[in-house]
Length: 612
Image (cartoon, rainbow, N blue to C red):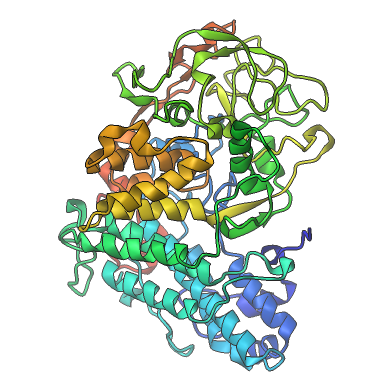
């Protein structure tokens, strides 16, 4: 398969065309330069590639808007200094904190998209139909960059399609009301949908947006707008911009759930996407594991609605590999104990942990079949199928996605290219705990993006297509909206969550939980657990918790891990707060980022977010 994907198309000719001293100045800098840029197909395509280049790489450790798992309760990265997410998790950020501030970055992207929309028709080397599609791509990307800002900052200033000879003055800028933001984005998405193709047929262009991408982005936007954070919550009641307009809806509108359901169903009704399932494995449980893994490793499969090609994922994969077991294993990317606790049990289909006691011990569902205590001798990993091990009972009998995603203390390394290597994280183990440096502090590593067929000791780091959107997410979006909308449709919600569960070999939710029938609150809770597991480490949990407005419960408290200071394997399975110092802190003002101090200085009349 070709490695030269659209997102990595470099564009050295653009420096003269894109430089701008101030990102709020949308005036074209040099008309002659623009005419030259858009006179040729090659430079026009390069300009569009530049518009795409602002897309975030949220899985990467130091991306402009990255580390979403580490900034949420699903991940526990090992490093304790020199890493920006710790300031986020400790609640110590202020409007002067520059980390993860993307206001300027995305407005630059929006400006470039607008320049492209206003100039692409000059390129007569492209047909009118080609120009229309490229214009629709840029229109979609512009709206998507606004969405990335809205989910972080709330309502923003909308430029719209201002002419290039208009200069925006910072003193005149304040945020437009959220409803105006959303109306603009929906309109832009709809315009893109009307023009974009349903499918990209050339592999070299995979990653460009399609009709399904735009419909899914619209569905995600409307889902977020239906959730409590953006749908009339009390925190933002009374907030007005300088023109006296309310920035946020003042009362909840339950009909927004109906809009979200309709938008998600429109994606499903395209009938172009399907859940990825492995077609070679005959063992049902191994098939379920490989099907979940194949979302990443079967490149550009039909579940991927929109993806980003990652041809060299060294940074990510090396940090998912255990130190001292492989040559370049840094052991930093780990699932949190809470995420590990959430994976359901394969036999019962129930999520084993219902909550936590004050001391951090789990409250276990007795009907789940889960056990926190003891060991099972002669356990064989259902996928790796290596020699038997002594496994902690908590790792036995779990959902297929657990074995696809989690490398637990006491498991074998994922392949045998250099012999079978037992991985133990306790003091004195094969990949031992240390207070500083590269090591594992959670008791687990994340293995989902590490393809076992790659020999990373020989520099084979693999490749994968990172999903911005995939069909399982849309199914869960639709199920959530069906459960919440005024004309509640429980049957539809169960139908689509069960499609996701079936791929992992689980029984139907109403079979696992007969008590869920007629119980909206319980179905809401179970949908959230399913979403946490199915979409783990894909960048959703961080914003899910915020838009559901349950972060004050989920993101506060000490970091619990396994006791890797223990000098033997058995004792290392105790839960403790002694391994990872500090605690997560979440206050009401943290639901939205503050407007950064630089923006406050250049736009003195802009309205700051609540609590900042």
